[in-house]
Length: 249
Image 1 (cartoon, rainbow, N blue to C red):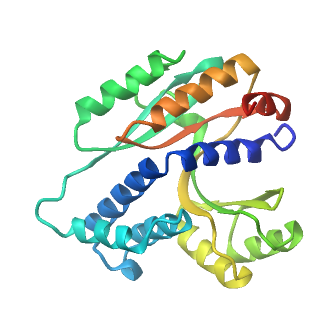
Image 2: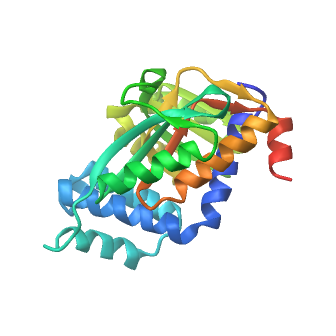
């Protein structure tokens, strides 16, 4: 990792998402509906739904919106969404994974391919970049009162594999099958609620980007995240503090 850039990357993406609050709520609602439809509306008995609801709450989504999304899953007229993973390449040779929930595969594929091609990238075949990532659980605490050393101990005791801390932000990773157990144990031991608890695609190695490529990549990621069919975008990029500061100007 180059300096604290990883955490500034996280906060940069979070800031962009906060500016698109209504779009974020729509994506969170879709995930809740799909999770409830697949595993039932009982939060305690449906791990995926529990994570979806937790993430919605941490993003200040109103309780009524959450309940409507759950109720929608039980209606006979609820849309059927397909979960599709798209892979491709971005500026600077970066590897990109896009997770989609869509009720129209053709529309999703066309829009995602366009977002790649118009911003210096190109969509690849399935499996073209996934081998460069691993599927893991990620838990993020922001503005935490817990010190780095204490969080490291608590996370390992909870069954996590790794902890990285900077500027009161703790990023904990664990095996994907342990995510619920680790997140619950950490909430109990810290008394804090995570800002995010989800399964992610974690890059095994990263590519450092200069200002030109970083600017193009952020534009491409914004274009992808603006699409209604796109839920998450992951990449193997790394941006230095100096470049990130120029991006934020």
